[in-house]
Length: 109
Image 1 (cartoon, rainbow, N blue to C red):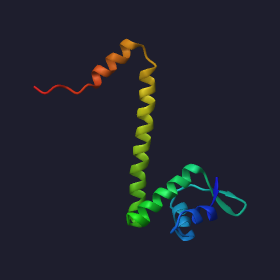
Image 2 (image 1 turned 90 degrees about the vertical axis):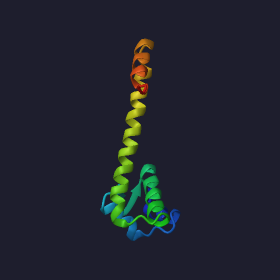
Image 3 (image 1 turned 135 degrees about the vertical axis):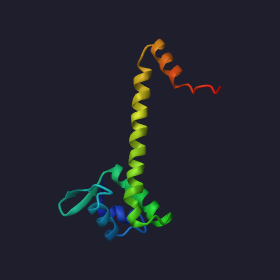
Image 4 (image 1 turned 180 degrees about the horizontal axis):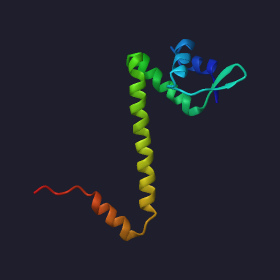
């Protein structure tokens, strides 16, 4: 967990204004401890990613929600594929081979 002041200090040129906007727009999620915003490690990573997009790659503020939504979908798809892979790996050999045979690309005629 990291407090907003620590997060800002660790992510130049992040400003408090930008951080507050991103929280308000729900690009990142924070909890409150006393009067201070606090962020999980995962949310801190999201802040670093948004900082890279915004400050280094010059992604427009209005575009950030779209980019983050697409990245969230990509990460969710990757997690589901890992779960699917684990489920297939837990099956018996014949079932695994049948699934892998179905996944093989079709040969061109």
